[in-house]
Amino acid sequence: MFPPASTAPAFNVFNAESILGVLSAAAASSHPIYLQTSASTVRCFSPHALAAMVHALLPASLRPLVRLHLDHCSDPDLIRACLDAGWSSVMIDASADPLASNIRRTSEIVALAKPYHALVEGEIGVVGGEEDGFESYGAPDAIPALHDVLRFIDDSGADLVAVGAGTRHGHYSDHPCSLHHHILEAVHLARPDTPLVLHGGTGIPLDDVARAVRSGGIRKLNISTAIKDAWLASQQAHLASPNPHRIIDSVQNSIAAVHESALTVIHFLSSIQ
Ligand code: 13P
Image 1: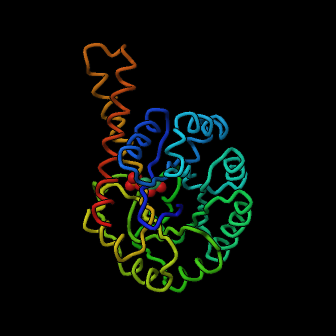
Image 2 (image 1 turned 180 degrees about the horizontal axis):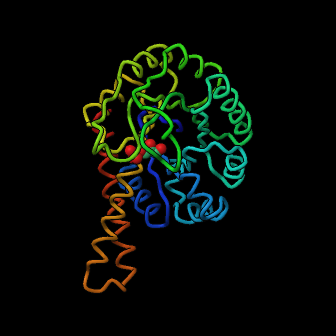
Protein backbone atom coordinates (compact mmCIF):
# COMPACT_ATOMS: atom_id res chain seq x y z
CA MET A 1 0.00 0.00 0.00
CA PHE A 2 2.82 2.51 0.80
CA PRO A 3 3.99 4.49 -0.99
CA PRO A 4 0.58 4.38 -2.71
CA ALA A 5 0.37 4.65 -6.51
CA SER A 6 -1.95 7.64 -6.09
CA THR A 7 -0.84 10.81 -4.32
CA ALA A 8 -1.24 10.70 -0.54
CA PRO A 9 -1.45 13.85 1.55
CA ALA A 10 0.86 14.10 4.56
CA PHE A 11 -0.74 16.12 7.34
CA ASN A 12 1.34 17.52 10.19
CA VAL A 13 -0.28 16.71 13.55
CA PHE A 14 0.75 18.01 16.96
CA ASN A 15 -1.84 16.94 19.55
CA ALA A 16 -4.79 14.59 20.07
CA GLU A 17 -7.27 16.90 18.33
CA SER A 18 -5.21 17.20 15.18
CA ILE A 19 -4.59 13.43 15.11
CA LEU A 20 -8.31 12.69 15.53
CA GLY A 21 -9.33 15.28 12.93
CA VAL A 22 -6.95 13.91 10.31
CA LEU A 23 -7.79 10.27 11.07
CA SER A 24 -11.52 10.92 10.81
CA ALA A 25 -10.93 12.55 7.40
CA ALA A 26 -9.00 9.45 6.28
CA ALA A 27 -11.82 7.23 7.58
CA ALA A 28 -14.48 9.30 5.79
CA SER A 29 -12.66 9.06 2.47
CA SER A 30 -10.80 5.71 2.65
CA HIS A 31 -7.83 7.61 1.22
CA PRO A 32 -4.25 6.66 2.23
CA ILE A 33 -2.55 9.38 4.26
CA TYR A 34 0.67 10.07 6.10
CA LEU A 35 0.22 11.24 9.69
CA GLN A 36 3.27 13.45 9.93
CA THR A 37 5.01 14.74 13.06
CA SER A 38 7.74 17.34 13.30
CA ALA A 39 10.88 16.57 15.29
CA SER A 40 9.80 19.24 17.82
CA THR A 41 6.47 17.53 18.36
CA VAL A 42 8.26 14.22 18.92
CA ARG A 43 10.67 15.82 21.38
CA CYS A 44 7.79 17.53 23.22
CA PHE A 45 5.85 14.30 23.90
CA SER A 46 8.74 11.76 23.58
CA PRO A 47 8.73 9.19 20.77
CA HIS A 48 7.12 6.43 22.86
CA ALA A 49 4.36 8.61 24.31
CA LEU A 50 3.49 10.09 20.91
CA ALA A 51 3.52 6.70 19.18
CA ALA A 52 1.34 5.28 21.97
CA MET A 53 -1.11 8.17 21.56
CA VAL A 54 -1.32 7.62 17.79
CA HIS A 55 -1.68 3.88 18.30
CA ALA A 56 -4.49 4.38 20.82
CA LEU A 57 -6.37 6.80 18.56
CA LEU A 58 -5.90 4.82 15.33
CA PRO A 59 -8.60 2.18 14.86
CA ALA A 60 -7.37 -1.18 13.52
CA SER A 61 -9.54 -0.79 10.42
CA LEU A 62 -7.64 2.38 9.43
CA ARG A 63 -4.12 1.03 9.95
CA PRO A 64 -3.58 -0.09 6.34
CA LEU A 65 -4.40 3.48 5.21
CA VAL A 66 -2.09 5.37 7.56
CA ARG A 67 1.69 5.75 7.83
CA LEU A 68 3.21 7.53 10.80
CA HIS A 69 5.92 9.71 9.26
CA LEU A 70 8.67 11.81 10.85
CA ASP A 71 8.96 15.14 8.99
CA HIS A 72 12.27 17.05 8.55
CA CYS A 73 14.86 15.55 10.88
CA SER A 74 18.63 15.79 10.76
CA ASP A 75 19.33 13.84 13.96
CA PRO A 76 19.99 10.10 13.42
CA ASP A 77 19.46 9.39 17.12
CA LEU A 78 15.95 10.85 17.01
CA ILE A 79 15.23 8.96 13.78
CA ARG A 80 16.35 5.71 15.42
CA ALA A 81 14.21 6.46 18.51
CA CYS A 82 11.18 7.02 16.26
CA LEU A 83 11.80 3.80 14.34
CA ASP A 84 12.09 1.93 17.66
CA ALA A 85 8.84 3.52 18.86
CA GLY A 86 6.87 2.53 15.74
CA TRP A 87 7.21 5.21 13.03
CA SER A 88 6.94 3.47 9.65
CA SER A 89 8.31 6.33 7.58
CA VAL A 90 11.04 8.89 8.36
CA MET A 91 12.60 11.89 6.67
CA ILE A 92 16.29 12.62 6.87
CA ASP A 93 16.82 16.23 5.86
CA ALA A 94 20.47 16.74 5.02
CA SER A 95 19.62 19.05 2.15
CA ALA A 96 21.68 21.92 3.57
CA ASP A 97 24.82 19.78 3.10
CA PRO A 98 26.87 19.51 -0.08
CA LEU A 99 25.48 16.81 -2.38
CA ALA A 100 28.00 14.07 -1.45
CA SER A 101 27.32 14.53 2.26
CA ASN A 102 23.55 14.66 1.68
CA ILE A 103 23.77 11.36 -0.24
CA ARG A 104 25.96 9.73 2.43
CA ARG A 105 23.77 10.79 5.36
CA THR A 106 20.57 9.81 3.54
CA SER A 107 21.93 6.38 2.58
CA GLU A 108 22.96 5.78 6.21
CA ILE A 109 19.33 6.33 7.26
CA VAL A 110 18.14 4.05 4.44
CA ALA A 111 20.38 1.31 5.92
CA LEU A 112 19.16 2.11 9.45
CA ALA A 113 15.48 1.91 8.41
CA LYS A 114 15.76 -1.31 6.41
CA PRO A 115 15.28 -3.80 9.30
CA TYR A 116 12.21 -1.81 10.39
CA HIS A 117 10.73 -2.01 6.84
CA ALA A 118 10.24 1.75 7.12
CA LEU A 119 10.22 4.21 4.23
CA VAL A 120 12.88 6.91 4.03
CA GLU A 121 12.34 10.34 2.53
CA GLY A 122 15.34 12.43 1.51
CA GLU A 123 15.52 15.97 0.21
CA ILE A 124 17.58 17.78 -2.38
CA GLY A 125 17.37 21.50 -3.00
CA VAL A 126 15.67 24.16 -0.96
CA VAL A 127 12.15 24.57 0.34
CA GLY A 128 11.64 28.17 1.37
CA GLY A 129 10.02 29.52 4.50
CA GLU A 130 10.43 27.72 7.80
CA GLU A 131 9.17 24.41 9.14
CA ASP A 132 10.37 23.35 12.56
CA GLY A 133 13.60 25.31 12.23
CA PHE A 134 14.45 23.85 8.81
CA GLU A 135 14.81 25.34 5.38
CA SER A 136 15.40 29.01 6.04
CA TYR A 137 18.99 28.83 4.79
CA GLY A 138 18.54 29.43 1.08
CA ALA A 139 16.44 30.95 -1.66
CA PRO A 140 13.64 28.65 -2.87
CA ASP A 141 14.25 29.72 -6.47
CA ALA A 142 17.67 28.00 -6.38
CA ILE A 143 16.43 24.91 -8.23
CA PRO A 144 18.77 21.88 -8.14
CA ALA A 145 20.31 20.65 -11.39
CA LEU A 146 18.67 17.59 -12.96
CA HIS A 147 21.88 15.54 -12.91
CA ASP A 148 22.30 16.23 -9.18
CA VAL A 149 18.74 15.14 -8.44
CA LEU A 150 19.20 11.93 -10.44
CA ARG A 151 22.49 11.22 -8.66
CA PHE A 152 20.76 11.78 -5.32
CA ILE A 153 17.95 9.36 -6.26
CA ASP A 154 20.32 6.69 -7.57
CA ASP A 155 22.97 6.86 -4.86
CA SER A 156 20.98 7.61 -1.70
CA GLY A 157 18.44 4.79 -2.08
CA ALA A 158 15.70 7.00 -0.59
CA ASP A 159 12.17 5.65 -1.13
CA LEU A 160 10.65 9.13 -1.41
CA VAL A 161 12.45 12.19 -2.70
CA ALA A 162 11.57 15.82 -2.00
CA VAL A 163 12.94 18.14 -4.68
CA GLY A 164 13.13 21.87 -3.96
CA ALA A 165 11.02 23.26 -6.82
CA GLY A 166 10.09 26.76 -5.65
CA THR A 167 7.57 26.04 -2.92
CA ARG A 168 7.86 27.27 0.66
CA HIS A 169 6.55 26.34 4.08
CA GLY A 170 3.97 28.62 5.68
CA HIS A 171 1.82 31.19 3.88
CA TYR A 172 2.70 32.67 0.51
CA SER A 173 1.38 36.08 1.60
CA ASP A 174 4.40 38.15 0.55
CA HIS A 175 5.88 35.75 -2.05
CA PRO A 176 3.54 34.28 -4.65
CA CYS A 177 4.17 30.57 -5.21
CA SER A 178 6.07 29.83 -8.40
CA LEU A 179 6.38 26.10 -8.82
CA HIS A 180 9.15 25.13 -11.26
CA HIS A 181 7.37 22.28 -13.02
CA HIS A 182 10.24 21.71 -15.44
CA ILE A 183 12.49 20.15 -12.78
CA LEU A 184 9.77 17.85 -11.40
CA GLU A 185 8.74 16.78 -14.90
CA ALA A 186 12.32 16.14 -16.01
CA VAL A 187 13.00 14.05 -12.88
CA HIS A 188 9.75 12.13 -13.31
CA LEU A 189 10.56 11.42 -16.96
CA ALA A 190 14.01 10.11 -16.05
CA ARG A 191 12.99 8.18 -12.90
CA PRO A 192 9.25 7.42 -13.29
CA ASP A 193 9.24 4.89 -10.44
CA THR A 194 10.56 7.30 -7.82
CA PRO A 195 7.76 8.87 -5.77
CA LEU A 196 8.44 12.59 -5.39
CA VAL A 197 7.34 14.74 -2.48
CA LEU A 198 6.03 18.29 -2.60
CA HIS A 199 6.69 20.32 0.54
CA GLY A 200 5.03 23.63 1.30
CA GLY A 201 1.65 22.32 0.13
CA THR A 202 -0.54 24.99 1.77
CA GLY A 203 -1.43 27.75 -0.67
CA ILE A 204 -0.01 26.28 -3.88
CA PRO A 205 -2.48 27.15 -6.68
CA LEU A 206 -4.64 24.09 -7.31
CA ASP A 207 -3.78 23.98 -11.03
CA ASP A 208 -0.12 23.74 -10.08
CA VAL A 209 -0.80 20.90 -7.64
CA ALA A 210 -2.81 19.06 -10.31
CA ARG A 211 -0.02 19.42 -12.87
CA ALA A 212 2.64 18.36 -10.36
CA VAL A 213 0.61 15.24 -9.52
CA ARG A 214 -0.25 14.36 -13.12
CA SER A 215 3.08 15.11 -14.82
CA GLY A 216 5.62 15.78 -12.09
CA GLY A 217 5.61 12.47 -10.18
CA ILE A 218 4.31 13.96 -6.92
CA ARG A 219 3.07 11.10 -4.74
CA LYS A 220 3.20 12.80 -1.32
CA LEU A 221 1.86 16.30 -0.68
CA ASN A 222 2.85 17.90 2.63
CA ILE A 223 0.27 20.04 4.41
CA SER A 224 1.05 21.64 7.76
CA THR A 225 0.01 25.30 7.75
CA ALA A 226 -3.58 24.60 6.65
CA ILE A 227 -4.00 22.15 9.56
CA LYS A 228 -2.54 24.66 12.02
CA ASP A 229 -4.75 27.43 10.59
CA ALA A 230 -7.87 25.30 11.10
CA TRP A 231 -6.86 24.47 14.67
CA LEU A 232 -5.96 28.09 15.50
CA ALA A 233 -9.20 29.47 14.04
CA SER A 234 -11.24 27.07 16.16
CA GLN A 235 -9.26 28.11 19.28
CA GLN A 236 -9.84 31.78 18.52
CA ALA A 237 -13.57 31.21 18.01
CA HIS A 238 -13.73 29.33 21.29
CA LEU A 239 -11.92 32.08 23.23
CA ALA A 240 -14.47 34.56 21.91
CA SER A 241 -17.41 32.30 22.85
CA PRO A 242 -19.61 33.04 25.91
CA ASN A 243 -18.19 30.16 27.98
CA PRO A 244 -14.54 29.47 27.15
CA HIS A 245 -14.16 27.29 30.24
CA ARG A 246 -16.14 24.56 28.48
CA ILE A 247 -12.83 23.28 27.19
CA ILE A 248 -14.26 20.09 25.79
CA ASP A 249 -16.29 22.20 23.31
CA SER A 250 -13.01 23.62 22.10
CA VAL A 251 -11.53 20.11 21.77
CA GLN A 252 -14.53 18.90 19.75
CA ASN A 253 -14.62 22.00 17.55
CA SER A 254 -10.94 21.77 16.75
CA ILE A 255 -11.27 18.08 15.80
CA ALA A 256 -14.09 19.09 13.45
CA ALA A 257 -12.09 22.02 12.00
CA VAL A 258 -9.03 19.84 11.30
CA HIS A 259 -11.28 17.14 9.82
CA GLU A 260 -12.78 19.65 7.34
CA SER A 261 -9.40 21.06 6.39
CA ALA A 262 -7.89 17.61 5.78
CA LEU A 263 -10.94 16.36 3.90
CA THR A 264 -10.79 19.33 1.51
CA VAL A 265 -7.25 18.33 0.51
CA ILE A 266 -8.15 14.65 0.21
CA HIS A 267 -11.17 15.41 -1.97
CA PHE A 268 -9.09 17.63 -4.23
CA LEU A 269 -6.39 14.97 -4.64
CA SER A 270 -9.04 12.32 -5.33
CA SER A 271 -10.65 14.55 -7.97
CA ILE A 272 -7.49 14.94 -10.02
CA GLN A 273 -6.22 11.33 -10.08
P1 13P B 1 2.97 24.02 4.52
O1 13P B 1 3.51 24.83 5.65
O2 13P B 1 2.90 24.81 3.26
O3 13P B 1 1.68 23.39 4.83
O4 13P B 1 4.05 22.87 4.22
C1 13P B 1 4.17 21.77 5.09
C2 13P B 1 5.40 20.97 4.85
O5 13P B 1 5.95 20.96 3.78
C3 13P B 1 5.87 20.15 5.98
O6 13P B 1 7.09 19.55 5.73
